[in-house]
Image 1: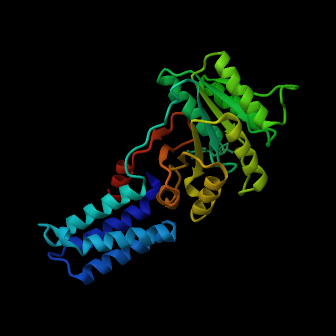
Image 2: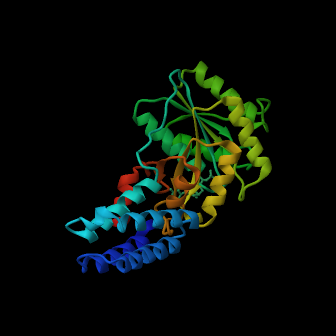
Image 3: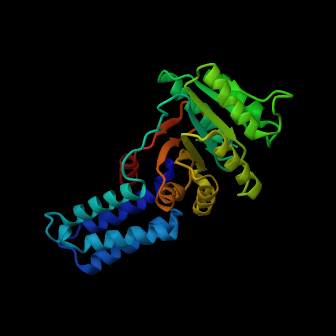
Length: 300
Ligand code: GDP
């Protein structure tokens, strides 16, 4: 994966230098931790996350588990691996379904983050698994958004509920509620609500998303974030957490040539799990997110 190319190379280099050593002196550990810190910062990982991460690695690397290890350098790599998994959220977290269908999934995020594309990807994947999702077009902000979801729905072979004249046009809350009612009537077991975003965090947009959340009481609120937004990731994620209290994160555009900081910051800063990795413009480019596999890719 391109996203972690540079970070991955830098860490590999750091560990190569370490491997030439037998016992590790505190100076060796400090030097290694300093290099890890620089590599993470250059990858746009948020400073508080970097600080916490390197402090933990340092403490453990100076402790007994490394001292007693047959191969201290290998043990340090193992520690970095474990701590990376921890900041990526630890255990894999799957999408949660309602006991009584339909499961309502609301999407939130900035404009251009990849919400509509993800809605199509998710619908397609859920259909493959035997579900009958209904996409709901509640992004009424951009004139073309409803149309775009229609195209994506068609590509995914999924049903869509879109507002028609006289049917709550202009009111995303009414459209969302009507979409859930339609799913109930037509026995769709999942509803995916696409909501409006803005280019930056915006109070009105956030209020609208919060109103939709209150009105439809979703089982999952997925915050879609573009992995390429770098240092802005943390503030954006915090604003959405405050605004809509999302239950999970979707990292999009992980296929891009970005530095990957968003991926490594968001779960740790919000305490919310990353559930999907979206990695391409095609509707099949979606994978569940596995913290351990992501850590392995970084340390590969
Ligand atoms: P929305 O405004 O949040 O609904 O974002 P869109 O779904 O319209 O996506 C914005 C742009 O990003 C579109 O040109 C998509 O084709 C593109 N896009 C979405 N997801 C991905 C992804 O995972 N990888 C890449 N490379 N492009 C993506």
